[in-house]
Image 1 (cartoon, helix red, strand yellow):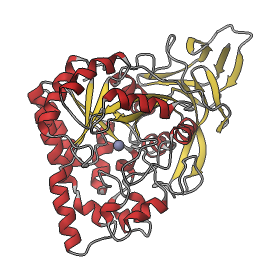
Image 2 (spheres, rainbow, N blue to C red; image 1 turned 180 degrees about the horizontal axis):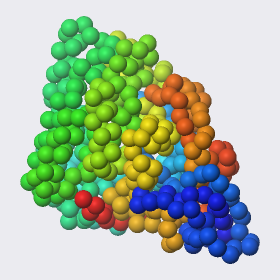
Image 3 (cartoon, rainbow, N blue to C red; image 1 turned 90 degrees about the vertical axis):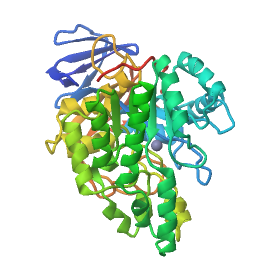
Length: 454
Ligand SMILES: [Zn+2]
């Protein structure tokens, strides 16, 4: 089975060129202007960009937080992802406190079966001991080469010594550890203080975990990684102060990788005053306009490495669980479908980043960092996961007109330009003119060692 994509402009992180792309099976077979493939199906990409399929480094599908189950499972979440041009998600398989990594991985494979985009798993470690350390080798063998540890949440929090030990062990296996950086003990105290003052509304959420709560934790993580002599990855970096702490570690010579999310580029804590302020409750919380700007500048200056959505959707009915107590609002928002459009509209079209940087942040950076050698580039021999991007499409995001299985969007009201007009997944033309025409075509991506890119 051959498909040829004609008349488009190929965009990779390192440049663009006008050329046709020949897909054979699930691989890109050739690129050029004189490809002879008379039997191939033809896709006309005139006026469009041909980009490597987007990789979302951060999703939570089918996650039970203990008080709420995410609105999106792998079926609905992966459909929203692929419609937005995301051909691969990296979801967080999450260890039970008293369970093994293998049990968590098995469980997430079960949840993800039938996905409409490709998927890989980071492993969230909720307990660190010798048994878990010994499992890392087997995780690598099964294609899990990145981990997450939380400095927060009672069911997941690990201590600094455990982070130190895990960093050392992960380094032996060429694996990366991402940390959710916030100071749990301090923010818990701040929540109690706010409640004692009678503050129960969503506006208490950002007050309880200001940027300093993140920056302190980033600084601590950077020093722990320095002591462990290990590379460090920070998930969902949200603040200018946090970025500054990570930059200080780099100035000391440390290898540091940073992920941010569209919400920390585009939304501010003013939104917690909205009537539907609960919608915006996520951790870290939304920050100030200056933080948005610092992160955009960081993207422009190549200080960041990847953009994930932290897609973790809840309905407004679920969000209402926190009426009268902001600390009980389920944390998270929906965004997996809109990452490309938001970055294109507010990044590329507004001149903050280049089209090539968009490809780096949405695809190539993740492919390299997370050991996906066949991905992140339009080139012969690479996987045929391809987005045909129509730059002229115009639309507006609303609370209801999206493919997420929930009744809200933190980006409702945002005008967007550009869209994934067509998407090829594993060589199959799954999205045509913005419609998902073949579902369930996703497969598990077994990943290799991370690639040092700094
Ligand atoms: Zn997350």
